[in-house]
Amino acid sequence: MSNPFKFGTVVSDVFFTDRRYEYTSLTQLIASENHLIMIAPRRYGKTSLVHKVVTASQRPVLWLDLQLLTGVADFASQLLKQVFKKYPFEKLKFLVRNFRIVPTLTIDPQSNHVEISFQPSVDSFVQLEDVLNLIESLGADSKIIVVLDEFQEVMQLDKNLDKKLRATIQLHKNINYVLLGSVESMMIDIFEKKKSPFYHFGVLFSLKKIPYPDFKNFLMDGFASVTEQNELISEQVLAFSQCHSYYTQQLAFHVWMKLERNAYFDNIINETIIETIQLHDNDFERLWNNMNNTDKKILIGLSVDAQNPLKEQFATKNDIKATSTVFSGLKRLSRAGIVYKSGQYEFDDPFFKEWLFSKRIDI
Image (cartoon, rainbow, N blue to C red; front, top):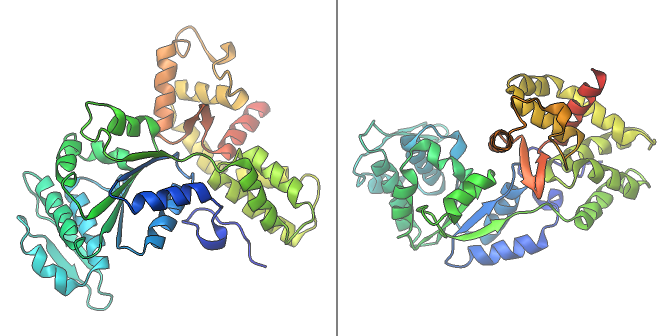
């Protein structure tokens, strides 16, 4: 039998957990003249959802992850590389010659893979602006969707990039921009603060967790092929994962594998959680050892009591008793993707939370 659960990559088809409302809303939005700004914690499924929507549109799509870029010139070259993947080389090579700074193109004759680089420039944005305007001209035939993932990283590439970028793309009529971000506070600063160049640039869409009933039904259908206890197991999986898309699929995947090999037993969820924690023990230990003392104390508090993570036993008169220090620590952990705010601050990874909690018990 084939495992019905999948994690770690973009999911689609039978692996995609039903998000009917979100899918319909985003499909309508992409078909309009508006741009989309989506905010969701890492591994919430925003990439899979947007991928499903833009694929169904049957329009040209260019997708770039800003956290993988090293600067504005790299932004320009990597985006242009995406263009070359979608459009014939013969058509583009003449258009590229009109760039103010002509890039160097290297083609592998066997794979047709194109490597692109720009010569160093005083103003690298000239290169990026030419690429964006090229995409705008190509969109005259069929409106293009440009997806920029982890968009909050735009300020790390250049401190003035947001101003220059907005000035260029606000003139585009043949592109729908989809700007995705995982750090809520930074995305809100970019799109909701009046002084920001991107203030109210597009429709803001905050992706929430998959509703419990929908996720439960999805899990029950997946587990039905290997056990009659599919409802109980689904409830136990969600009790641990708290409906977090990635970690629900991860735990469900490993539980299904165990059920497919063996019969159901009462402690199957806990045993699978322990095995998964042991598998990632080195990763969690490395993550923990690279944190400062204040962040460690905050996480210890969250692992014990999410409602009141700053109990006296985790504070001293010199450090995290100060509200400002705690707030700074939570923001730092949020930017690092270790915690996120959903009403209250929570661990992004429930396995990491369980690892920390179990380690503290053993002390």
